[in-house]
Length: 197
Image (tube, rainbow, N blue to C red; front, side, top):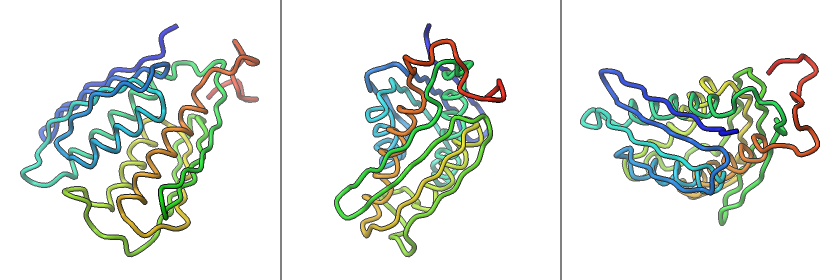
């Protein structure tokens, strides 16, 4: 059974298309107009082994905020769509990823209840190219709200802003991969005592 999601989102500020296949091979086609964000979404697809297409046109003449936010909202909605009824998945996933001097720890529960806990070092460089580093938390908030998952992201240390952000996306990719994969011991079983996720 195909586990794919496709979301088109159009506002006066942006036009977004996201397609995702949870059972892919990490093939990506990313174009948001924000170079570093493209790089991070590429990490998400490749390390999650999700086939991921993202095409966004936004009001970059203002700044990158709307483009980044609306892409994250559409990505979360597409991920939720691809999960389907969640029968037979592991549900929980976690991963710790180092990137040189930085470390990210990510834990996820595909619970149906959106909640985010996010910590990262203070006093990071404010920009990576045209990417405002304060948007990382907002990306996660937007993704969580639409994907309806509980997500804990913790970066206990790091110096280089690029490394700090990138290891978060890599760890998120792996945690989502592990949580969304099918559990061969739980075929046909919904991983919840409530009978709903």
